Image (tube, rainbow, N blue to C red):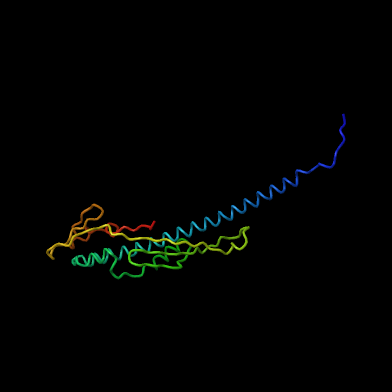
Length: 194
């Protein structure tokens, strides 16, 4: 039996198919743009974390050096362990680490024992379907903190050096044996602030 050919409904699904495929492609490109931005933001946060930690570690090393220099004057120790001594600007070290992570330091703030660094990535988000984002750069900030690991009690007589107790380990500083002195990481803890 021969059915008559009807022309009115032929090919109606094709425009719908094209519309659905175009919509899915647009969504895929939009997700790609969001992904590019997220990767750039993650890179900025990595650079900020590294820069803040570098600044704090630089100061930790300076404080440990100040302690070693004033080893025979325990009256100076409380000032050193509380960050109350002059140190060189650690922001140069922060800038070095930011640059290694393809970013630059916008701001470096360092009150005693707390170092906040704000960075901007050198790379932009790049071309995407979202207008106006091609020149945007990610920014992030991080704060690193130095905590003293040690406690001590100044002796009654001024001749003996105090015993340091650092995270449960006792140190009897011997100025004649530099190898036996605690290292900077034994004296101070450096970590990112929560």
